[in-house]
Each structure stands twice: as C-alpha cells, then as structure tokens.
Image (cartoon, rainbow, N blue to C red; front, side, top):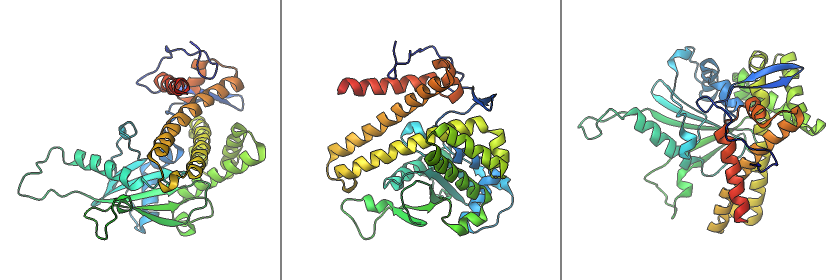
Length: 338
C-alpha cells in the first residue's frame, strides 16, 4: 500500500506500548530517542521537579526550596480527550496548570475549565459530594507560556466569560488564564528568576535565527544544539537528550509554521471575528489535516535525508505505527472528500 507521500506504508511497524525507541544520526554517531513526537522540549525540561519548582517560584514570587513538596498530577491521556495541558501540579493548597503555546487561542479558558474539572473529578473520586461536610479542593491557577513569533504583550489575561453569549456583567462562573511571553528578550524579571526558562528561550531563538540564515531546519537545530552546549546553555540537558531534542525541535518548528499559516487563513476568511460556523468547522478540520500532513512530511524528509526505510525513520523519530497510520488515514479521507 502506498502512503500519501509516495512512501510504501506498512501497518506492521512494531511498537512497544505505543512508544517507539528509535535513533538518529548526528556527527556520525547513533543517538537514541525514546519519546513520542507529541512530547515537547518545554514539557521535557519542566517535568523535572527541580526545574518546575524554579519556574513556579519565578512566576509566583515565592521561594520554595524543597522540590519534593511538589506533586505532578498531569493527566497523561488528556490530549486524547480533546484537552491539552503540559504540566499540572499540586503545591501547598493550590493546583497549577502550566501550558506552553506557540500560538494564542481564545478558547484557552474553556479548555482549562474542562481540564480542571477532570482533575477535580480524580481528586475527589473516593469522596461523597452529598455529605454534610464541605469537600475542600485545591485553588486553581492557570498559566500559559507563549513563545510564538507573532508580536504579543509580556503579560495578558483571557477570561472564560468572554465566551459567554450573551455577555454578562457578573458571571456566575469565571476562569482566568494568565499568558506570559517567554520569547528571548521579553519578561526580563521572570527570566532573571528562572535560569532554565531563560536558557530555553535562548535555544528557541537560536533555532529560529539559524533557520533564517541556513534555510535547512535540520542544520539549524543541530547548530543551535552545538552552540548551546559549547556556551553552557542547557548543556547537560542537551547532551543527555540530544536525539529527542533534535527530533522534537524539528516537529515543533514545522507545527508552529503550519499553525501560523492556518491562523493567517482564518483571519483572511473572517474566522477571527466568528463570522460563519462553516468557516470555523473547516479550519478545525484543516488543523487536523495540517498536523497529519506535517507528521508524514517529517517522516518522508527523514527517509530522503538518511536513506532509510519507513520503519527505520519512524524508529528514529519516535513515531508509533498507529500514529503514522492514523495520519495517512486522515489525509486520504480529506483527499477523497475533495
């Protein structure tokens, strides 16, 4: 069976628990990648409790020093439930939802409402909500870290009530999401307090700079990694996780470019002002198709550059057989519909 990119598709690509362990080649060495492509460098960095506590202190102005006080409670299957959150954690009497975005979406408060509901459901699942005693729950906090290429304020806020129709002055339900711009050179105070966040911003800026200068994304990412290691920027992290970082950087950059194109199309079509439901639905389908095409293109380009088979490319990129096959199905369905 031929794939959408002219690649011979094999449904028999082996996987272990849906997660691939693969390899990539850099500087003549074989590097192993064992994370799925859906992971991100941001999440990978701040899944480390020490780094996450550092980020929390920088955002909150607090000075906690015991990372063991922090309990990560991220819902790992949330993306499949139509929700997205990179990190959720409990600390003291609060629950914190941290999300990294390269594009700002006005539906962030609604998404977070669904996510925090799922978190609360899990936290109280063994308790009776019909007892006479009040069931206490941790106070929620919602932060989005933005590092897209569109101009954006250092700090802004989105409210759930902005989506209510009709608008009301004193909504019975409210949820506020704080968006922080973490591009290099922005939010200097925040960056000063979190070295990990600052160096992450430096790395992203280098990838974009070298992509502009060199044209080749593969070369840009590898040069950025080399320079950061040489200059002590995320050096230990990049040495340990080079293969994962290279693959995820390529995927994230391509994904960001795809989303920027879609946003431009949305604005041109009048979607940003909510003109027509049909346009909105078409754009949502376009995002799904764009993601699928991006994944298949990533595999195809890797096969061409490395002269490897489909199975070897998926191994190296950490893409499971199910994910690749689903992407092909989505593209084929859209092609048939056209």
